[in-house]
Length: 279
Image (cartoon, rainbow, N blue to C red; front, side, top):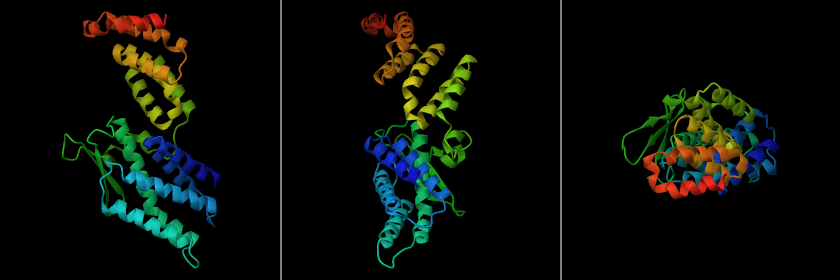
């Protein structure tokens, strides 16, 4: 079960970096690994990893985006009790502990999907923040609702968006190779809107692709005649370490377009400096 322990470790690291999307993804992936194995015994490594997973989830539940309710509180309380019982003589068994994980895994998966949805919709944690509420339906399924500060009513019932955001709900992430090849195909076919959406999804699932996809996003936005946004992406790519050569042509093109647009008249000096820096 080293893969399970490694995934929990990645989740801890991501949480410490405040990368909540990746942290929840790693937690969710870890529990999928756990569920796929036939565990006859929980050793100290797995037990400690479960404790770490609980600690992260407790902290995650304290984030303002999650509305406090009985489902969250009772789920966390139940897994705490199960973990404590497991350490006592004649306490809980491996089977008892694993059985108690069902709702806990459901909560982690709910948080995972909710955070990805918020990220995809570009809600930020410091906007109000948005709130996610969980509800267990009569058939035992978890439903999620999202509110924003501007709208007090429900703005999204995530269970109804499953088809639209199907990639967010897949049991297995698509590989980096898949995304890079699919993105290149869409770009060559001049399907720039579709290409942009797929890149956003790829970056949600693979943080390490951001550098290369920020560069590609810059060129896609140029094709979509959004020079200002394109320049922002080229500069973000540079901050992440993209080679100057990879973005120089894109930056010069974006700056040239912006210099011809009266909207960017006040930025003329800055744009000229960018063109000189990347010549």
